[in-house]
Length: 229
Image 1 (tube, rainbow, N blue to C red):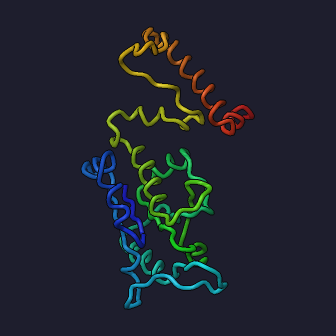
Image 2 (cartoon, helix red, strand yellow):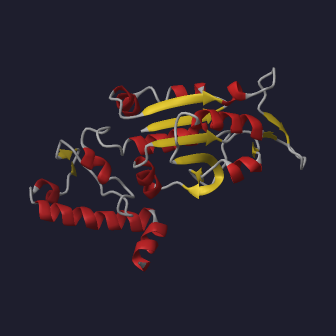
Image 3 (cartoon, rainbow, N blue to C red):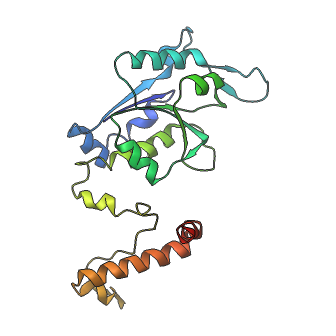
């Protein structure tokens, strides 16, 4: 998979992509991540990529020309399956979307910034707008990092135990059940006996029941959705 990210702050993304699982995925050549500085596509001698909004009001707006130049340049060498804009206005990012993105070959992410981007970019250059939550941040770089991280870990070979990703919360529209490890007892706090039984059928049943309990308690919105289906 190749992920290209256009941003006005590429240095903000260098650390998240050079450590832990993502670093190993890059070293295995399972994913290629390229950061592109939007200012490199400015025709302004000061490398400006923003201007005042025609509608007035506070905040600057990213201009259409440098974004168009950047996307056009990148598309000369690669065909993107999705061109994503990180925006609080977009579709709410979830596990199903992460699963879908992980099946693609090439993704381009445009990080929102300032007051937003010229609407013409959204209408003519973007294929999908994505939000990681109903809140506003100073820029879309961290959102791009969240999306990238959640997608890459689903690529076969990235996580040594691939079944681990398949048992994550949200994969089956439920929260994951509680997990325990050694010792079996600590300060009187005991691991549930069923997990020590060695009976796969009973353990699976217990895990499903606990997933339902946790979802009902912690995410009643999700529980209501599956109950209505």
